[in-house]
Image 1 (cartoon, rainbow over the protein chains, first blue to last red):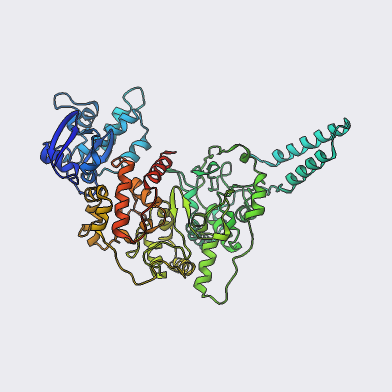
Image 2: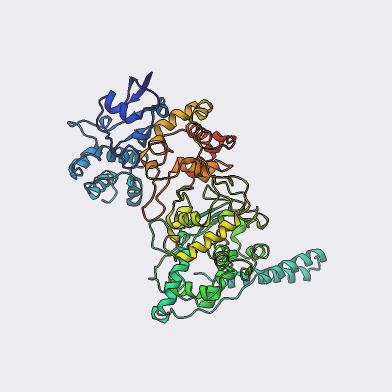
Length: 156
Length: 448
């Protein structure tokens, strides 16, 4: 059946059943390959995107749950030429090793920063707990988030 | 720590002076005088003396075996669960405890002389546990379940004391409690205790096994299981007439542990043992919500104690009517999909990857949804909480982790998917007013 989705500010119409996970449609139908398929069970966070401004696991979010709520993916943040502040911070801290988890990490951190521009360390760690990095760059990821969280007058 | 004894003496003196003034003016009516005298008398009856501070004992003053026993007892009593703040030092207190009467902050149980219990004698500790009175004479709030701890024997209390006094002292003052106005006046607690604090040992039943009696001692005393699993009355006391009829803890249902237990299969002592020490029973489900920290503690205590608890609890559930027949698993996708088609679609995309037939998780022998008490319970509360908040692995990072769906599913969608689950996996009647219950649960989770 035909389903219309709002992704990164644009309406997209796809042919899919309503129980299809959002991740499959983003990657297979819309060519937005930032979000990754990791576990498919909502356990690793590689598929994290924003739904109505909140970070969700797109692998366990069926289209039926999305409805007309806006979806935002890493492709909606910035471009290689014009990175968002958070993307720039991840680049500056060299927070990616293999990079598989990074789009999910960025989208979850961005959701936190949008709701709370200056989260404290405990909040950042608690919020990022659901996203895993198998290379072990968590400390760099945290530094990148701290860079943006503390950018406006908060001690780094 | 402030000493409340002068604080209690103050009002007594003030009332006395007022009475003298009134008498001089001869304008007092005898009724008013009687009430005032009664108030003074009642206030005096609530007074408890301070117990003299002692020099902080050296850790070497306590035998190692006693400290080790105390460590096990502290786990059986879950002391650290309430007395540790999120991310804070163990047993240093300051954890906010939400109650219907306001928010209390747990005290510092480390032997810090200024902010903890460093100056407490064993006698002061025993009194706090059995009578709910602080060393300085203040009444303690019953968030400390002294109506259970009053049943703990002196040897165990002394072992707990030895364990606490040998911890590393942490300097940490709890934030002030935030209570509804009159309840900040602690002498009122004396009245509460008259109603709900019944000291004395747990009676031994000679007709029961030693395991059952040991279980009764642990469950009714240190384990304070009734604190969550027994309903509370308007005064916040446990409703003794309905002991273990099921209660509420942090927005989750603590299921009935009596004949009204909602599990699809009757709990056996073996199944309870497996659940309580590992966090999951293949015949039931995984510990979720506030039960997680309980099984985390019980995973570290001697097997005999967990088996005793299991024996006693299983006996309490004896005589239950539901699900007493031979176990059978229900899976009625067709019926459920026709009753809740939106729920069926959401389940396929959000839940079936783990809970559907043939899912990898099911291949590992994890229990089917219809075996979970949260799904068979008469109230949808715990099932809603599990969907909204997810489940953390109960024991040391092992066991199932369910992601939270609070941000991906709307209230109506959570209600749809649970209506489907209830119809597919149980033969119990549909939950009434499910969407409203989801709204209520979400509001409650949003509170700090």
